[in-house]
Length: 130
Image 1 (cartoon, rainbow, N blue to C red):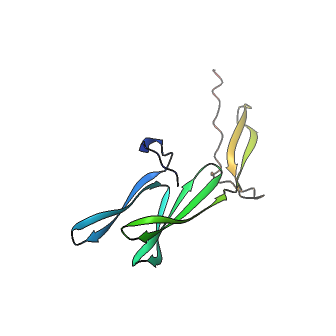
Image 2: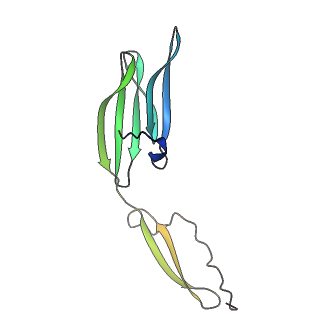
């Protein structure tokens, strides 16, 4: 789990989550975390459902499971795995209707698949006056 004093330094897609529990005196904050993803699990500890968070970097995914211990959630187990890059960039050289050569860069399919994530579009036409 990574933390920062300044929430603006959390990175892209990192948002704060607050988890509260009901008490006879009102609501009590039991987990305050900034993370990419937060899942409430089916498993329980001390009567409260376990929580899993995910954080992402450019090269790995970090997952942490939190369990309720007394008055707050505490990190129980963390593990990380590398992000496997399976997409690739495809460069296509084409000529438009006026003969201008165009380079089209796009994400291509997973593995060796030639399918592309972006729909095929017609290349723009060049303005011969320029």
